[in-house]
Image (cartoon, rainbow, N blue to C red; front, side, top):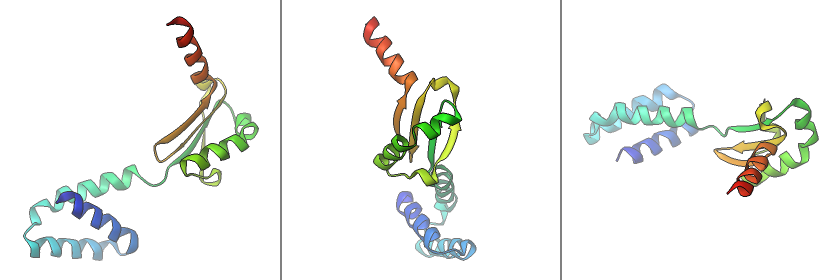
Length: 126
């Protein structure tokens, strides 16, 4: 039941910008149905989902020049997972050696040199 209320509240918050009115209506609905005890737990679930989602698009590169060098490949990788390069936040992480890692909504395309080197090392040593 909590899942249904959570989903309904999330959908209503997306369509209605007046948060206070939505929450008041939600609380009244729970009271009339006799489900007022789950109000806080549903709100906690909604907060967790709102904080954990939001179409996060991120591109991790070894240095700033890699973002320009691999621009076409990054765009293709993000298209595979449903993102776009215009929404992407670029993060520099020199531990990936080279290449890129494209992420969108917890889906990842890893084309980093580090992953390829580790994979090669493991295949040679085992």
